[in-house]
Length: 71
Image (cartoon, rainbow, N blue to C red; front, side):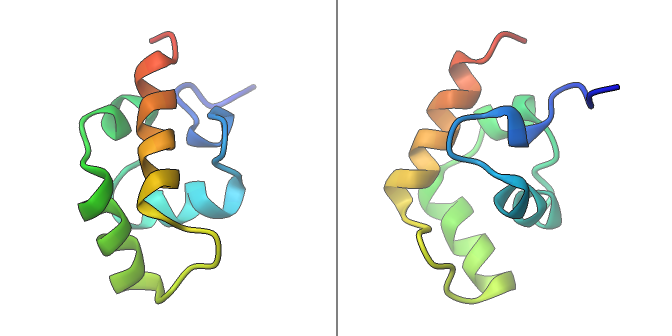
C-alpha cells in the first residue's frame, strides 16, 4: 500500500530528499506546499551539511510540484 501524500511521488524528490525533508518536519505533500524554498534549503543544509544537487531553484520546483499535486 502506497503512503498517502508521499513526498517521493513528486518530480525531483527521490527517497533521499524525501528522507531529508521528513527529518526537518516536512512529512507530506500538503506540508511542503506551505513552505519557503530558501528557508527549507537552509534547514536541510543546517541538518545535513551541503547537499549535492540541492539548490533553491530545485526546492522551489518541489514546492511547485506539491502545489500541482492532486490532494
